Length: 229
Image 1 (cartoon, rainbow, N blue to C red):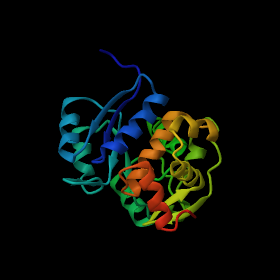
Image 2 (cartoon, rainbow, N blue to C red):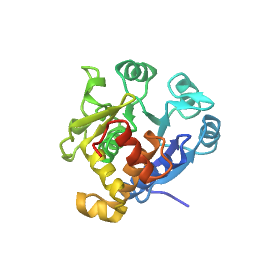
Image 3 (spheres, rainbow, N blue to C red):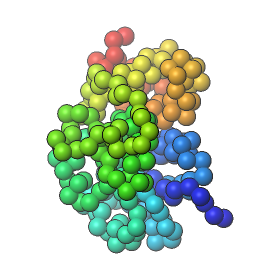
């Protein structure tokens, strides 16, 4: 079977996050070849078996570290570009990613449009660090919105923070819908989003808050002061 789209390898130990990310990527690139790995060892096995255009790699894995072990990945797949991901984002981590040669870095709290823009930039051979919360960006970082050919929506102001992860106004609005029991389809319609983008945001939100359900995610957000009840 031949593929006309990009070849992605998603490496993250949280299956729910991988699923949401995969849905988002396949909506934007329907012809893409998408492979997933839950551990560093599985990722290396995939790279030994098949060529990949872009590796989206979680920095913290149970059996490996994305930055420290990046040279091993490069040795197996020198042609692959690497977009690092993390639930946390700070200037030191960004500097380490740059020094290790990663083409980009996105926090898991980034909006779907920012992640898609970062992927587009990296696939074109550019670097992508602009989806990071502004406080974490080194002054030399180029905003992703400037790196892509087509115009992107203006970023939604970040209005709440939890454990180093910044929640945007859009994500907080989705959390309020979760508290009301609003289904994804209705959220997408009311917020002018695609349903798959909503699913991805809900997956990330529940993971960040370590919640096992949509209702629990809302309750945890209220308990931590991110939302007013």
